[in-house]
Length: 314
Image (tube, rainbow, N blue to C red):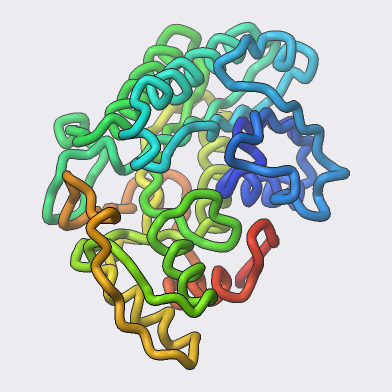
């Protein structure tokens, strides 16, 4: 049984990871300020998890020292880009100083530990083709992406200073049941279910969508890799990009109503990427990982299941 601490464990990706860890008989402690996540996202697993309601930027030394985790998963962050753009100071405080707080607490542990830090594809410079993990391909275009780049730099410095194995997971567009931010897919599903006119932003941009349970599996594999004292930065994506109108078409097949999207100027970003696509070769090579859930199957799960419901697809 591995002792695992998950920051942001009541959120969208965090709760999926907690379910995955419990399925592996891990002992789990969650640190979450519940500003976005909810204990309800843990569903029936609430009784098996200790949830500590705390801002990740506050001192975590006492929490870490009392639990002595063997694996730390740092997922707590602000990642809804409109919110980050509206309050960049808060974005930097939570994402950068929060990471510093977690790593500082991990450095004080008595025994060996592996650390997994959730980063983002937003660290990359815009490109037409698939992104690889090389340093020279970085070039974030917004405050969120920059906050994640600094997060990565803190993690790399921590690994070099302490000799701890650190896994940096560059997550592409995660989707599935229980999303806690008004991203494209949950917003589209919400509007379709409400029978409203579908108001969306730019549907020509292409994104690499990866299902939340597949992401949870990748994070666990990355922790095991780092547990051997190795460090790595890997893309967590499918290797295929879909345009927004393709997603609309797929979801439209799940409702009897016709869909005629209307462009909503308020949903258009001042700066946007035409394509965001992963080269997942590194994750396949180091972690023996590849996503198992297709876009259509994942959309069906997001359509059928209420927020916070656990889902596992074969």
